[in-house]
Image (cartoon, rainbow, N blue to C red; front, side, top):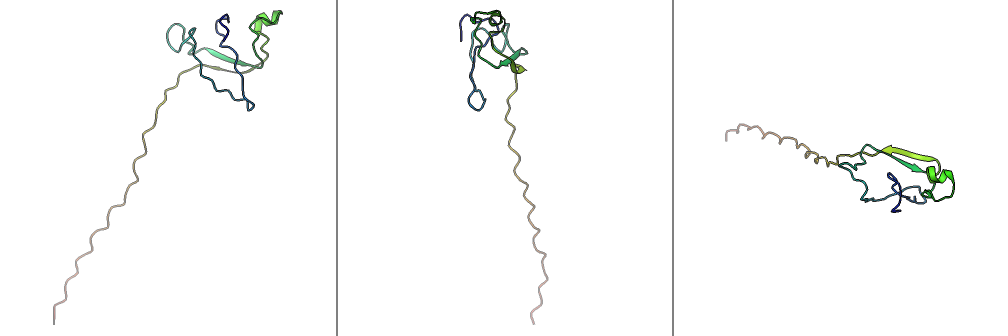
Length: 107
């Protein structure tokens, strides 16, 4: 990450051949709580690499020549919870004991 980037610039990321990006980001300039919280702020993914205003033209100073916007969203927090396991299946009640049958008298 460029140490001289402007506020709100998180730096360039590179997507894989499948277009998917997985990153972990740690930065001293912002956090998820307090006065530098980014929660509720927008995030925009651009088409091209940001030249950080070093492209030598007015568009570079304005947008970093980063191209069109591909995606955007709002940063939020989600509560992660693990649902409790389902209850064990109910066992059917045992059958009643057989009825007593009268004994035949001996002859």
